[in-house]
Length: 86
Image (cartoon, rainbow, N blue to C red; front, side, top):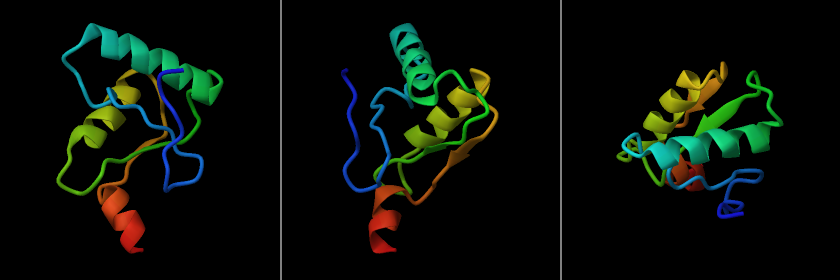
């Protein structure tokens, strides 16, 4: 696939267009990808994060997933910088 496993957080996947609300293609890509990684289970927990706290794309991604019907979406505000520091 076009997306791969993210290095640093075990089990995380990289979805580079998830925070982009402007593109119909990114909506279709995100919806398709989330269906694949969750096995179609919209109650499965999803955590979205960026490189650091100043990046808002992960907050957008969490909101978009919620709009798509995923009920347990979270935003990890500190992102990779916070994860590595911990």
